[in-house]
Length: 164
Image (cartoon, rainbow, N blue to C red; front, side, top):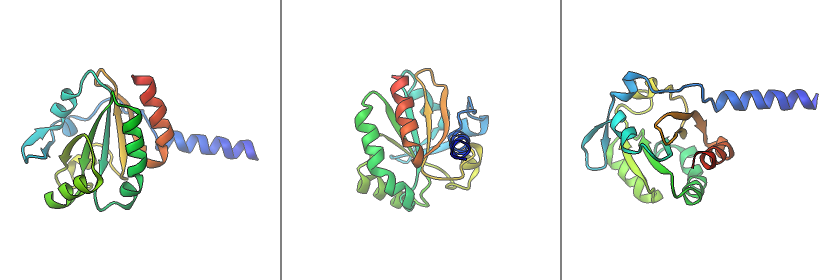
């Protein structure tokens, strides 16, 4: 019985932390996100900007309790991986809440605001159903892990070590 429980847990973990997606859809890549200065930037250009380094993309929002609760683990991840770029995609409802959240949590990295939030076209194009959500991209710009959530911290940590 114990072995069966371990097997079921393993399968569920792999489903929740799927890396089956190998590239972003054209719709996702062509989405314009707002940078901190308010300029519109294509998602594909954000990815290109970081090519040559592993990248952690975190989709989050300042109103998200799980996102806020996850901040210490995120900071630990950043401290342990100085050669990894961190890109934050916020699903906040407005610019003021987004910028206040960045300042309050002292988030180091590149910041972008997702148009229409979680339920908009960008969210749908990346199958966004939970935040915080991690997407990890390798040095070549390929997706190494497509869906990870805050409870997948150890898997994310291990994967980043292997990508450096």
